[in-house]
Amino acid sequence: MTEKKVAVIGFPVSHSLSPLMHTTWLRKYGIEEGVYEKKEVKPGDLVRMLEESFEDTAWRGFNITIPHKEEALHVCRTLTWRAERMGAVNTLFRGEKGWIGDNTDGWGAVRSLEEAGVDFKGEELRIVVVGAGGAARGITHAFLEEGQKSIVILNRSCEKARSLALSLRESHEGCSVEGYGFDKWHEVIREGDLIVQTTPMGMVGCPDFPFDFEGAKGSCVVMDIVYRPLHTPCLVRAREAGLATVDGLGMLMYQGVPGFEGWFGVKPEVDGSLRRSLLEAIGERD
Ligand SMILES: NC(=O)c1ccc[n+]([C@@H]2O[C@H](COP(=O)([O-])OP(=O)(O)OC[C@H]3O[C@@H](n4cnc5c(N)ncnc54)[C@H](OP(=O)(O)O)[C@@H]3O)[C@@H](O)[C@H]2O)c1
Image (cartoon, rainbow, N blue to C red):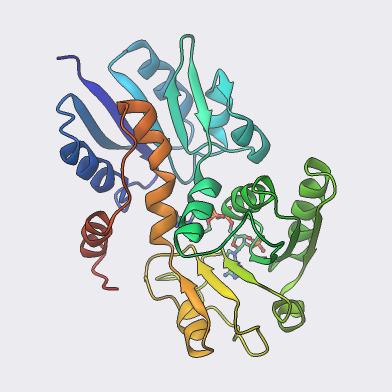
């Protein structure tokens, strides 16, 4: 039996839930040759590490996390269209002559929202995205690829929000994407059908999420991609305002699906038992 090895690479990487998630799937589908590890790789050592791993055919691929998502892109021989557009990779697959880089973060967010009942293929949604970093880039791209056309990006640095909005307008003809600073919060959320929080605000050890949802439409859905804590201040306040909410664990689970399927040949199921294992690992409850 030839071993099929995969690892998540980050710095630090000890907090990553990916090994637990993929190992749970490997056991569930009886893939005895599959191994999923974590590898702490310092910035500067990534390129050599990935090049050396390609020489060993037991390595089927990698997940890439902070801070390597942009640097890993330059090691890839081929990129999927979405990784190329997002300028970052989170999943590598073995190609014939080198690593193939993909970015599944936005896809994971879309699948998680669909599971919660958001219909991207139906009516045009007015979407508000808080943050303009790597995750926001992936998620906004994915929303536009789903056919959505109206996004407002709110960010601490207004300049960064504007710049992401401009690049999205350039890559997706006919869409309306605007970027503003946080001072527009109440004005913008009034119109929102979907609000997605992508900054670390409210995460353990980070500054609080400072806004409330006064004036938001009763039908608005709020997602926070932070999952430590699971019930973030953003989600708690949205629930207090009577809004439907989606936590960040769904995105985490779904973004892992394309990788597992590519490495091990089985499309894994995102289900309640996987969610319970991850909740237990982070000491949280639904
Ligand atoms: N659920 C999942 O599967 C999943 C996947 C990916 C990421 N995440 C989470 O998403 C978060 C963002 O990740 P990322 O890769 O996008 O990071 P990033 O590229 O570093 O971007 C961070 C963004 O958050 C903003 N920000 C940072 N600190 C802030 C603060 N104190 N107050 C207000 N805004 C602040 C930044 O604004 P400026 O431009 O003004 O600096 C920027 O827009 C992290 O917490 C990460 O754990 C979750």
